[in-house]
Length: 55
Image (cartoon, rainbow, N blue to C red; front, side, top):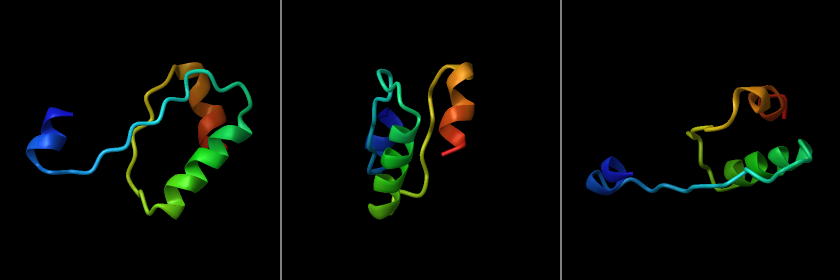
């Protein structure tokens, strides 16, 4: 985050920690696409990454 501030990058953080329904990930990804956020980092537990990427 310090690098983002220093470089004047726009950063959006989304918490998905309490999502149970995998289709909710799709809604978040579609929202980011509408906002033209093309680069994002997925920080999650290893066992959740497949269900996120399948969306």
